[in-house]
Amino acid sequence: MPPMIQITHLRKEYKDLVAVQDLTLELEKGDIFGFIGPNGAGKTTTIKMLATLLMPTAGSATVDGIDVVKYPEKVRSVVGYMPDFFGVYDDIKVWEYLDFFAAAYRIQKAKRPQIIDDVLALTDLTIKKDAYVESLSRGMKQRLCLAKTLVHDPKVMLLDEPASGLDPRARIEIRELLKELQSMGKTIIVSSHILPEMEEFCNKIGIIERGEMIVAGDVNTIARQVRGQHTIEIGVVDELERAEAILLGMSDIIREVKRTSGLRKLTDAAELGIAQTLQKNGHSSSGGIVQIGYVGEPDEEYRVLQALVQANIKIRMFHTPSADLEDVFLRVTKGHVN
Ligand SMILES: Nc1ncnc2c1ncn2[C@@H]1O[C@H](COP(=O)(O)OP(=O)(O)O)[C@@H](O)[C@H]1O
Ligand SMILES: [Mg+2]
Image (cartoon, rainbow, N blue to C red):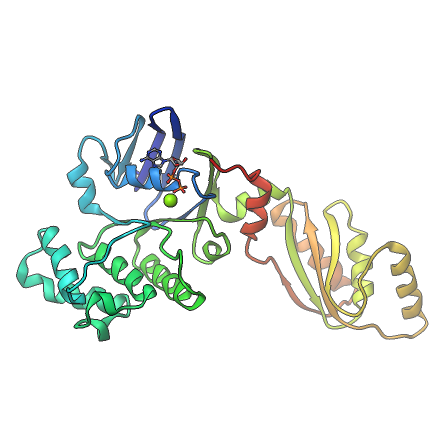
């Protein structure tokens, strides 16, 4: 199967400004790609080229195997595009608004009512079917715009900052909706300049800065590449100091040991020594959570757990928190903005 989206050395110039340069990317069906970058980085320009609304200066792109420059009409039938800014129409009801777009996509009149009901249900707007568009809250308008991009059941969705300007509750609603679209097997590109909202549902991310894709790929792989290590959180029922001492002893695969909860902040080995002495003398120690920076091979993480278990440390948690994209972003970008 060809990739659902294939971008090859794509370039866009606006007069003497290069907005996008040498951008290459491949996405499979079902991928949710978080397109991340500061304002002015080139996200909107890239998305508009995929949506066939801007002509590339050079390079090429295909959606579902269809060339965006050669067959824009065909591409539009498989793509749902939600722009970063959209006008909503006054004096029109929610269902009329959707009916208008369904007609524009040449969906037969007889089929439209069912489709409208379906997209309203999906975007949780059923009760607003007969409301006027201008009476909707900003979050609802955003969801209506998403509903609009779904009327022709596109395989690919291009969503340009769909959660921007929304309050936290409305952002969560958009996020839930994207997860639902993901479960329907859609391929989605979603742009944002805000990172944490992406990590929950994107399986791939790309970071763009000044028109160039700096890194792109699987979320956790990128996090590991950028950091050269990844975080494991370990919770112990008691004997936190002894657990820390064991971890510090594994310096071949553990770079840092940091206490995130517990009684005292662990600073150095001397302090650890005190803790161990206290313990030998019969003082009990408390439990807590330590974070380690693991630098070993991904499939040898078990060695850490094994060492703790063999030492009879009572473990209640051992996991890798999802990649902290904020951290990745700060490491990769240097804060340049066009
Ligand atoms: N129509 C245009 N004419 C000239 N320059 C533009 C135009 N649209 C965008 N740009 C410039 O191209 C760069 C990329 O913009 P854009 O793709 O909107 O970035 P983003 O969506 O990441 O914020 C910016 O420097 C922006 O000012
Ligand atoms: Mg933009």
